Amino acid sequence: MKKKTASPPTRRMGAEDSKQRVLFIDAAEELLRSEGYVAISARQVAAKAGLKTQLLYYYFRTMDDLILAVVKRINERRLHRFNEALAAPEPLRALWELNSDPTNATLSAELTTIATHRDAVRAEIIHAARTFRALQRDAVTRLIGKRAGKDFPAAGLLMIATGLARTLVSESSLGLTDGHAEARAIVDRWLHELDKPAKR
Amino acid sequence: MKKKTASPPTRRMGAEDSKQRVLFIDAAEELLRSEGYVAISARQVAAKAGLKTQLLYYYFRTMDDLILAVVKRINERRLHRFNEALAAPEPLRALWELNSDPTNATLSAELTTIATHRDAVRAEIIHAARTFRALQRDAVTRLIGKRAGKDFPAAGLLMIATGLARTLVSESSLGLTDGHAEARAIVDRWLHELDKPAKR
DNA sequence: GTCTATAGTTCGATAGAC
DNA sequence: GTCTATCGAACTATAGAC
Image (cartoon, rainbow over all chains, first blue to last red):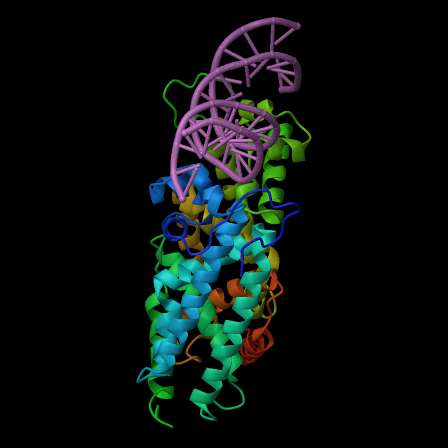
């Protein structure tokens, strides 16, 4: 399966699983984590990778292509971590920790920013987010069973936990932590209660 | 009180409550809402305002100055809306609607992005966020009284509601709404319960 | 595959005439 | 106050030699 995503005449060459190509993706992801999406420019990515700027265009047709590659890799890894969490002794707590891990929550916010500004990457991000949400909802539904009652459907609780996790991380990165401990305590009590009979 | 915030020699002139100055701020805020923080450039702001790019530098020493002015105005307005919400018949619901209003929640996210990337504006944003959080926490504490119980402190509930509101809006703007209705239903039930004896 | 060279655009910001 | 003119930097992307 060649690259060639979409383009009128395709006038340049491309490569596939080259070592340098991975270096560019690594550098872009590192910039995404440390400086945010806006920091991903051809020059900065190449500098971080220790390679020439123009070489980037040998491996990626456009910056959109590079960013798409980064996003896909992030989504694949997230799916993998999700499956690991389900196998943990306290799966609900593992899911919460996955979502409230600063690294992942930061990336979630940046992915949203990218989806807003990069037409070529939006579909991929939305599709992955939808898939991930559905997987989590099914898992949570199965894990809490009937214990949360019909007044607290799994989808709603998941939504609340997801929003809280992202906001905790986002604010913490600015040094804002008022109310965080109290919110975490509430979640903690829920998890302790719901994860108790984990073996089904 | 002149402008002159901070600068070595201050080589240019500045104005204060000019009509054009407000036009620039209006244009910048409009761009912030529609295209996000990254869209705020001198050229784009001036174009939106229907004025010359260089005129912007007559009213604002740097782009940081302009952005700071925008941020301050947003924060002042938010404070005003907060006080209005407290005077509503169902103040808790009014607060929830204030926080989950798409317009405001979008701005919250953009303010976070600005705080991350603009050193000169960070302090203002963090200080305003901290003030706003404290005001809300005190209000919610007073409004729910002892009804939520010591297991659900106002600060924690506020944090959960804030995070949920921001995430609902952020996802909706991408067309992502899975789980939103369920989460809103949970909040709705809480509000209905807690706002009942609103008159104290 | 990797390089030099470069085109064309946008950016923030300044100088100086009117 | 508002204008023309312009600088230097960073940006995406391409052409073509090696």
